[in-house]
Image 1: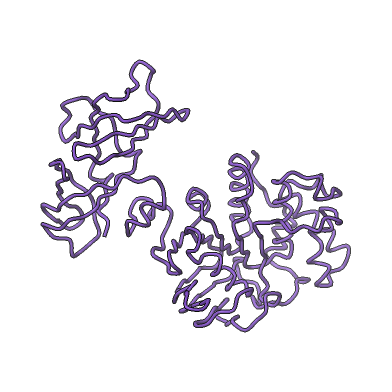
Image 2: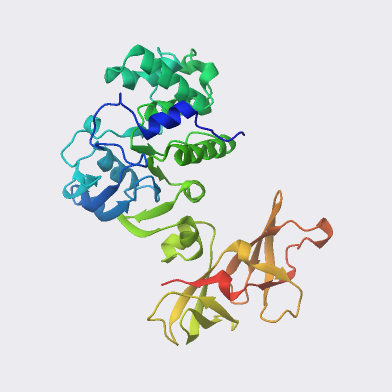
Length: 387
């Protein structure tokens, strides 16, 4: 797929515009995006705290994903930012100004929903132009901006079609075009790709990321798909029971999760029960229940010898090694699954626990079979002690 290139005219409009409507964002800064600050935000439904005392600072032009399972509060939090759901406590600031009491249409945000919500009787161009018409933009200016926005999303040739004549991916591109045509400083996306198949989802992920880099808009994105969050985000806020349990870059969340919950939710995980034998500044010597000694990294200043811990080793970090390799662990193959270029191996450890190994598929003659012993090894830098 070709990368998105912003036309010179649209780039110049993003830098300075004399015809855009006034909004809470105020005068345009060097970057298009606004800063968003959530301060002690809570939203309750009866006795249930859907959002519970959330603090979050989003930098101008940042792509932040709210990630969590169903019921974690991510969509409720996004609805609060959008103004669709009132908050019971706290405040929401955009570029330092409170928007808590502003209705959604006065917050100046673009919004992309899970369901495209396109007007079926309008053409693609008319759907995209609708928001501009509501703000009184002239017909010539509106047509120019709609055309440039559709070209940006590779939808220019479909401008005269009706939504029913488009594929699901094309309809979602129209929904995104409608959200960005006013060049808002903030775009909110509520699981916009969940209705698409895997290949189309991945293709539009690339386009959303390219759009973000080009326009510099602040994007707050909601998903329950950890792969989607890892692929798109500058930072990810993982939510559980209405609280942010960890906030960090995709690499930090994947390699150094703060808890068992985050480790299991963000990626595939092997969690080993072990006892600390020796705790050093940034790594520890441990012993598994089966008596296997190994080292792992940690970031817990209170970690001490004798403490029982869980250690994360990602499946792709476990390697199959020859018998007799120092520091290796013997396990028995329980199953193998061919996933194309990847071979997934489930193996049982001597203590009865199971681990998953993901490796490049070897030659058929070397592929492990059920019941065969294998030797596993990982480096200290591949293991992480959970706090």
